[in-house]
Image 1 (cartoon, one colour):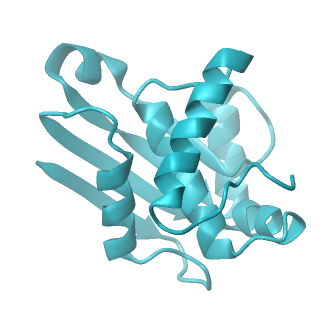
Image 2 (spheres, rainbow, N blue to C red; image 1 turned 90 degrees about the horizontal axis):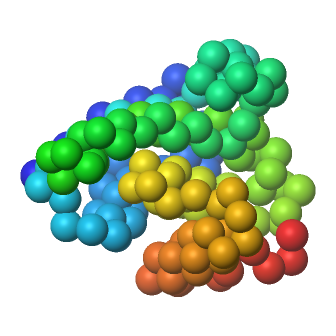
Image 3 (cartoon, rainbow, N blue to C red; image 1 turned 120 degrees about the vertical axis):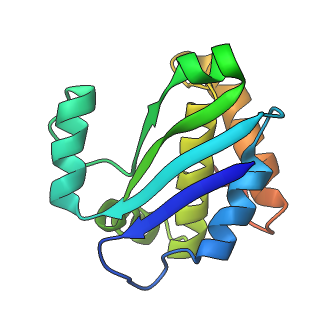
Length: 150
């Protein structure tokens, strides 16, 4: 069973449709989870900064915050968590990197979903593994490697 809520503080250009989010969630699952329960929310820059400070101790807005519940994943084979995407940061990064807003949203959603599954990019080995999974998933949606031309 896969269930997710998808909330947007404001519907703006480039944001993903619910059906596309559903496809990305399903494609990004690296393990066969018994259940998947997610909250996905697009927020403004102020909310992103406040949540980043509250949960990560970093006083600046960020593109995606993944709040995972690893005990549910490890104990019950259930993926659950919250993904908070900042429209303003994603828009700014897409423009700076000369990417489509929708493609950058898709990348950030995949990136956040992988974090919820325990992937990280703290060291080079982990980063390379996580980036390759992202590249492979995005390729199935005809999206080029997001790490080229950065």
